[in-house]
Length: 160
Image 1 (cartoon, helix red, strand yellow):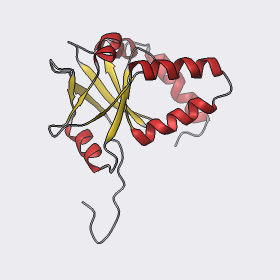
Image 2: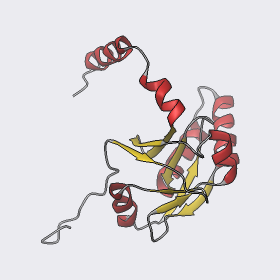
Image 3: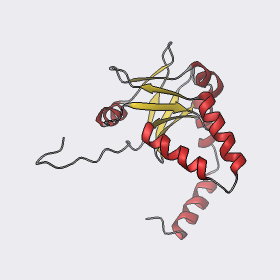
Image 4: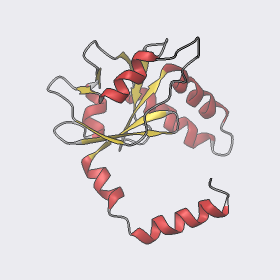
C-alpha cells in the first residue's frame, strides 16, 4: 500500500498466467489480476473478442479508448466497423465477483472455444488477453527465427 500520502500507480500485471473457466463460465483470476481490478474505482469490465480466436478483458475506460480508436480509424473504416460489430456481438459488461471470478457469456465461450481448455492470460496493451490453449500452441510453435527478426526490427526502431 502507498505510504505518506503517495499515490500508487495501478497497472496490469506482467507475465503469463494460467486460467480455466468453471462449469458456469466464470474465470477465476490469478491473485495479481484480482488485486489490480480490486484497486480500480470503476468496477465494470467489458469482456469480449475482437478476432473470434481470443477473448479480452477491458476495464470500461480502456474499452472506451478502444471504441474511440475504432470510431476514428479512417485507414480502413470497413475493418473498424467489422471489429466493432464482433466486439459488441460477443461482448458483455460484467463485474468481478467477491471470489475473483469474471463471467464470460455463452456466445463468447462458444465462439472462441474457451470451455474445457487451459487458458493463458497476459497483459496486451490496455487489456488482458485470454488465449485458449490451441491458439497459444499455434503462437508458441512459430519458428524462433520469427522472434529474432522481430526483435531486430524493434531494436532498429529504438526498443529500450
